[in-house]
Length: 139
Image 1 (cartoon, helix red, strand yellow):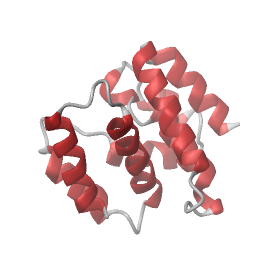
Image 2 (cartoon, helix red, strand yellow):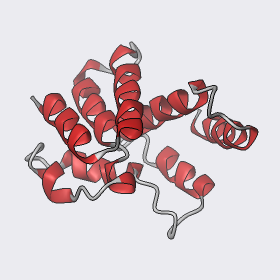
Image 3 (cartoon, rainbow, N blue to C red):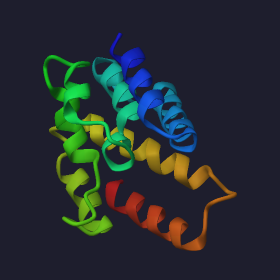
């Protein structure tokens, strides 16, 4: 139920390009056999939601409605890159630091980078360097 509602939010708030990106990230997450079953559903829901705060007008209220335990909102605070607060590298280090506490964020960020790196038609050398450097930090 949480996953379907997360997908609905993504469809409602994201433009088509960003929605398709979230769909690919959710698929990569769902197909990843390394993600522990106990957290898989939350990871997939987060994959659908991961760009909502950066790329739409979605607020925490809509996400709270999906998850009474407020875990998804907590994950969103970690996975959302606030440019005014951190450089991209600092943001990636931050995700690495919370990996043990919030592995869902780490798994979804890996799937997010996988998708960005697989989009050959839009992958510039600058973006390739950005994401490969980030992967080196996370892994």
